Image (cartoon, rainbow, N blue to C red):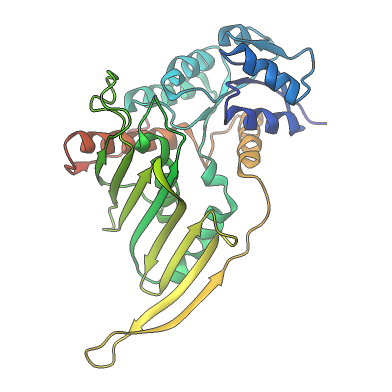
Length: 347
């Protein structure tokens, strides 16, 4: 068997338990510590996965970092805690897999990327959709759309309502990551508006007007392509849908559908002054099986064992997404003013 990478999992809440499960199942990793501030969650995880008694269970993440066997840490804790944890892990010589968003501030994200480079350690961000079979297959199908015209996405549901970030920061990052990957470019300008009902101003400096329950965001790309996002945790109509529309048809990824990825072919002919729809048909695209998070964890282990940066979801990609979200937040604070974006310097 090849070398097993010693992993410490920080946070075993709703998402962290899935990270723990995947690292336990991967023959290339060995979980040596599990950290959570809630002792009851540690006990529940130990029982659920029948953890070996040699696995350290602790409420203090610094204690886990003192273990000689730890080579990498997987962080699934609230975004506000990411910066100190990731910085400490990198300084101590560990590779890091961090849940999205990398941080809530662009400057902190950039600092972490530079620190990882200085330490010659890998910083990988868990943007799970970039490993999703439908997103990968969608990229390959874009050429069937003809000239790209616009895009849209809807990510809505009724709960969970976050208390640390708003609906923009909770939900938008998935669709922005998919759009950037499909288009092969980053937005150059963004706009956003939101409304608050449930949690008006709570004193958080990052959200002075409260936590928006619904957000409408627009991304404008250098090619002129525009995408509109509808984000809400206050809508009982659950949607997980993203689409690119072109001159020859639309590519649609509807996560809740029985056949989630399909091309809706169709275009116009113009006999005289009328526009007549033609060639309308639906083409479902076959997807290989596989859990995206399993691919994330395996990819992280490859980056660690080869000590090579991720070409899929690096810290810098995470920082770019934080920059876009920060600009959207600034636009919301200014009632929808357009905010221009400049590429981040990776030096």
